Amino acid sequence: MKPLYQYFFRGLFAILPVGLTVYVLFLFASWIDSIAMSVVRPIIGDFYLPGLGIALGVALIVGIGFVISQPYAARLMPWVELPFTNLPVVKSIYSSLKNFADFFSTQKKDSQQVVVLRKPGQELSIVGLVTRQDMRGLPVAMAQGDPVAVYLPMGYMIGGYTVFVPRSWIEPIEMSVEEAMRSTLIAWMASKPADAPQTAV
Image (cartoon, rainbow, N blue to C red; front, side, top):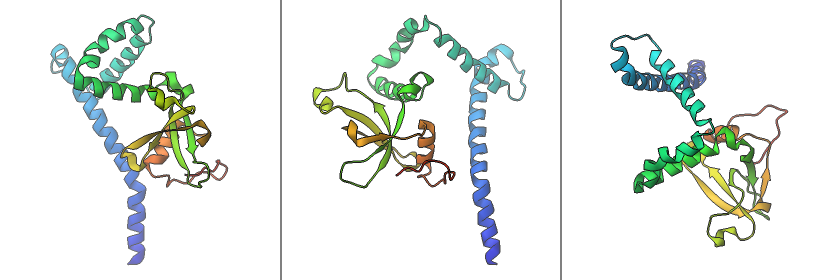
């Protein structure tokens, strides 16, 4: 009976990531479809084709991306964001989400950096993301000693910490932000190819 248990769990662990991924994508697609259809339902009535809502949602997102990429959008965005940047509670939520989205935007790819943080004299190493290279606009006490801000994500995406450390404590590594976040999500349990550079965690 032991081989049966082994086969069962091997099959379960093999299909679980695929099944969960498909399920999450299905939920997301259904959500987009329902929102898009609720918007256009007064226009098209009962007419419906499978996937129509998703197609409309994608078209809307592409359209928004095109509009905000135009030169005049930079002058209009502050007016659009005005309600979200002035209400007390909404301002905190919106600013946090916007800063997080801006960090992963294509316009800021050059400033993103994955590093190994290691305090001198200690062997412990932590992989983090540099989120700020200079302290302009922050209190003077935080700018002493040429520090950098490093975000240390926790495993399984349950939060993280931002630490301000001397620049000499960090060492850049050849890894994209997406790969670092993905590896952190699974607590760095995934194996890397033999020819990939080895980094401390």
